Image: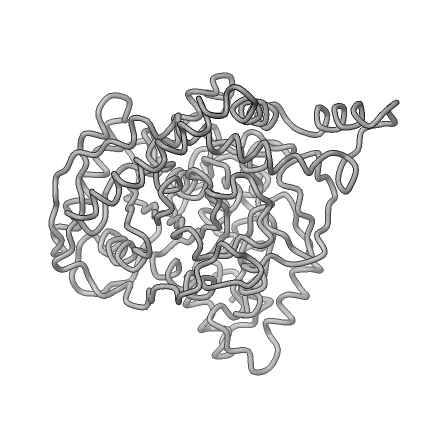
Length: 490
């Protein structure tokens, strides 16, 4: 039976464990015995796996009386979320072998709901990248085409959920690092409203932008995980004190919903198959009762420059703690403290992390702070206003998740600007603190995943999930079982 459990949705798997039709151990190991045995050596989605830790988690989930919403469900989590039973290394040499002394809040909430952390997923070092090629553990590959990237920086969890290791994954999204890899791997990827999921135990990149996000193969599983994880946390002062929005109506339909259609955004540089996916999704929404609202939308024109000033400035500050003194990698004996700092950070950080630290330090330096960082903050305020204005005429926006389909490994590693532009459609939601959801819309002619992105106002997750469900069912008004286009080994 375990050989087939990995195909089930998280909700169906949890129901089977609660009802005694499956054991938690079988639910967790099914992904390893089936798809991981076929895919993992090629895809390299996992960086830390421990059979003993999985077994202990499954034993705890299988205790008599376990009735959690995620009872027995395996979850793969990004390598920048603190876990007691696995290392947390952020894909970096500088944290090699580091074991946190506590679980992140989202990890504690997963376990409290009966879920089992099945592995830690690969990532771009310190979440800085859009392809999962900048990892000290080597790149992750796209399961639909191993010559292509899975997106980043949360490419490991996205790829693992896509090939079937687990029905749910957690990543972090600072500028699109959940939504873009979800799009490239053909799964759902939610970046919630800023402050709805606790960041306690998430290793910081850009603190005003970071948010824990959710991967799943079905829209209903995104809603299920959000219901478990969202809420105030006394350990994170940036979490919101009021109750999180109720997403239980994710299957209630979209009759009367208005979705914004900012067609001016997908001109030059956006691949034709991406636009075809947008047209298909718009048609499905309209068939389900939603209404298209054409509008002009501006933030994409200046959000990239704004983001890469704010994010790198915050990274420069946050990553100052990795100095070879308190924990993690330390360079060989040096004559003085300054030399220790220099050698440790030069040897421990990869080139992309060093590039962003240097950019951020420059933007914050005396004489340039006003010209760069403060100007970026003013632009950020304008971006928020642009989104607020858009949502006066629509309930959500339908737009690309990425300008391209998955690109080839090595195609953009030597061109940082081209890599940064991969996030042009996702970074605005982080700057504005609003939710975004990547939704798969089938495969391209070359059998590569295609996706669209839904963006909503603050606490707009219920609307996004209802729209995602309408796209998932291809606009059918009657409820139906979701389908998933599994990758094929060829």
